[in-house]
Length: 180
Ligand SMILES: [Cu+2]
Image (cartoon, rainbow, N blue to C red):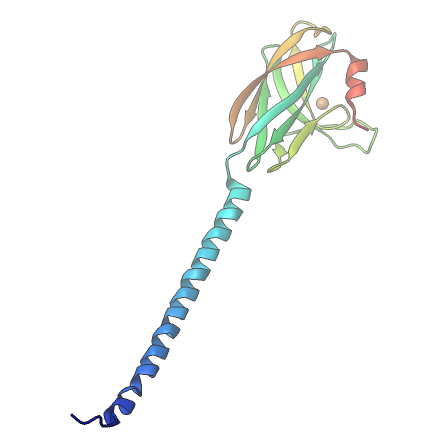
């Protein structure tokens, strides 16, 4: 039994550090690739959530302006807490048709223009109000009297139809609603 120094041992430890060194490097590369894939997936999910997530709409403060004639205007605010939507139409049993209007005139000047859609921004609001965008009720059957109510169905591109009960208010009350 001789306790000879392990001459072979020193040479045997030679290749070991090399292999031990190469494996972690490969693992590091794999970890980096997997890591960036995860980052890309998460980033994609966050982006998709912001732009294409489901809309979460609430309709606030609907109002229709009292009118003795065949034309009346309705106002409301659509609040979205999701991925946004688009108002693509409206209808009411109180009118032959309801169209979407934008006010294209300068401030204080009413120049109405019919539009096909009104955008509800993601996480934002679409405000229909006197002097701005509004709903136009055309071919109103019975005059809209202050204190009355009409039913209004809003049609959204992604959320589908949403029916709201709309109080008819006098013009002075409507004017006070203008947040300007
Ligand atoms: Cu109009």
